[in-house]
Length: 370
Ligand SMILES: Nc1nc2c(ncn2[C@@H]2O[C@H](COP(=O)(O)OP(=O)(O)OP(=O)(O)O)[C@@H](O)[C@H]2O)c(=O)[nH]1
Ligand SMILES: [Mg+2]
Image (cartoon, helix red, strand yellow):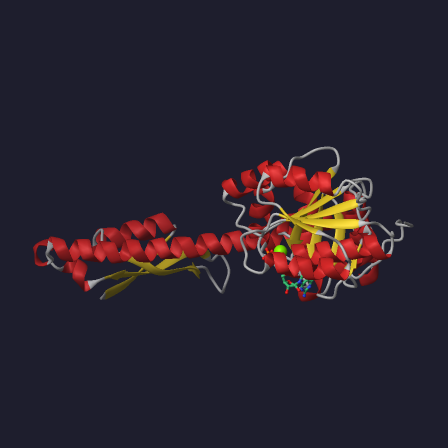
């Protein structure tokens, strides 16, 4: 490699000199401003100094490098540049997110991160923290607990119009639907037991789960403890007959099979089997241990069943409580029950919004007196 230094009044002149002397392949390795001339340090002039370089390979006559060597070299360069550009894009995106959130003071930023770690989406955590930021930005000092309380208040205001608890006691038929293994049968047994033990109701069961081996036996075990009859429904006619037979009962709890409801046919079968009327209420059962995308896909598929509210299960197995608020945001339906264990009927409760917020952020909301 050949190297040479050029000094000129401007960068453009220095580069011109370099190209005249070393040719078009020469390039600038480094450049700096220097001061030259003058007298005793006075009247000095700013000039540009560049160190130019010229690779030996560029000196060789073109014929000595084959076309294929050129194209191979070009490919390597293009590949390197593409990967560098994509790295830079990623860095810029990360910087954007960071810049967006770092507008928060530290005390709020750490709560934003805490919401994210509990399963709140970027978007929801951002909306809530933006609102809190609006409230605190003129304050010089703010404590952690105050920020947490303000977040709680924001969540409360956002969802207070939705129904929490308040199972539809006026409905005779109470149906649960949801993906496989979320806890439908166990939860139905818990609810039915509460109706018998606390509300002194006369209850019965129906099940459309004729797919899973042992499903009917599982329900019969619970029904036996409550001395309640179980009707197995294979067809719409079975359903109508069972309805007649159970005319004198206060409530009939309808269990359904857990299936991959992304398959529309399964949803249609269920719609056909259990005739919808004013006396029927359907609750969607969602396990909080599920991935949010899977939960959304299942709930979307269940739309024809007109879910009234959600039952949230397995709260004892996760800390991802952000999923609860994601559901409230996306579907605008409240939560009728939560379950937090396998014990029937103990591990079931009708939540208030305040309790759910407390679970998620560890703060009570003063505004909620309910
Ligand atoms: N830890 C925990 N386990 C639960 C809870 N609710 C249900 N389970 C357990 O989850 C498992 C599945 O419960 P099931 O009631 O059979 O679920 P399912 O939705 O009826 O299942 P399929 O009918 O097969 O779709 C059982 O072992 C239950 O004991 C809960 O709140 N917490
Ligand atoms: Mg079941």
